[in-house]
Image 1 (tube, helix red, strand yellow):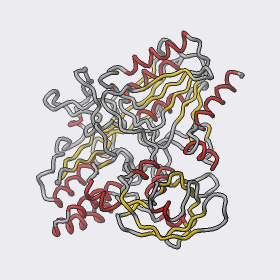
Image 2 (cartoon, helix red, strand yellow):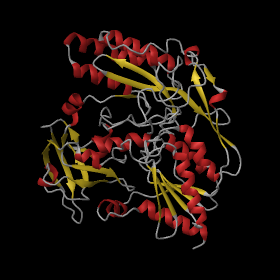
Image 3 (spheres, helix red, strand yellow):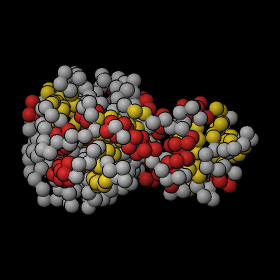
Image 4 (tube, one colour):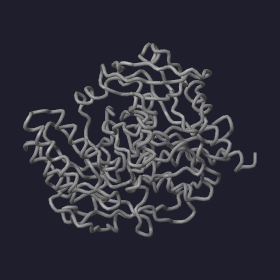
Length: 494
């Protein structure tokens, strides 16, 4: 998704220009954080000693086929989750290399781009990515059938947004309609065949893949048609209508997204409030510095100090839509809730292409108790777009007995050390992780595995019922926040 600046999804250091250091930055190589004239950490270990050919990432002037082979060689050697995610690099190359050759022979820019995208999207990792080609995306999903839908707890597919004057409304669809069939198939079967190629990020968890399919089902090329059977609320009558996709400037797609709106470099990392219930609220948009908040951990400390001084009995930390940022900030934030020093993460990098990894001792992150300590119960709210460092914060807090995590769904399952970067012909940039985050026992943390299991699972799952969907999208209420307040009430004995 386009934005004025790209927020790092799971970085532990900032990009340091080659002119500043001869080593390669371990962190966000293709995404930047809006930090101006602030001292940044320099990598502890020269990765050139760990990963052969790490510098060789600019293939922009090569032919498409040559660049693809170089990309494949580089990624397969550096990628840290090959076995964890069950990636078969040979099959990937054998599948997509002929299509790249076909695109080159025909001079077809979109076939080249879509093949490159399909290759990367075959790796179930939300921190693998490719810049969006707006022309190719326009051809594929610029059209909308005029609604957005989501799954309910009881298995139904319901419409949570109808575009005014769009194809669906013209055909008689109203808010809350249940989608029954799609091109003569049961809607669940149609969803299973829905491509994830144009998801804004690669879904890493099985739950994330399912939610992405609901978002993409009502998208198509402009002029495409679909025959949809639906039933409006309060009636048993099923309407079958053939809709033609119209351009909507991705309005319906945005309506189905859980991500935060675009964030600028002058935004603050978080905001605070005291609710009518008397509880404190910290809404964290990302975990990274900006121009107006260059040291968010200090700002967080100030917020906690204020809550403690005012005897706030409980705290809610809202991480919904939080796309992560600087992972090294997490221990400093979490320290206000810990009584004992605890290991947060070790980082291991691929040593070669044979599955060997090197743990960098000086990259270890520890959570140290920090003053002031917040003494009351805490509820953390997450959703499926909570990513990277935000997932790390939720994980760190969830380990504490006074903390509960609440959400409709688990988090994104994207928790790794970024740094892989390749420049491809056509001006396209590819990025991918090069390090894995490990717990005290050396186990991979949070990153979704080959079965799509990963991320932070809520302690309290609020069911996605029709009533909750209506409360959220029609009445402007917040069932997750209501549940968080109820949990704090119970914890403090109200």
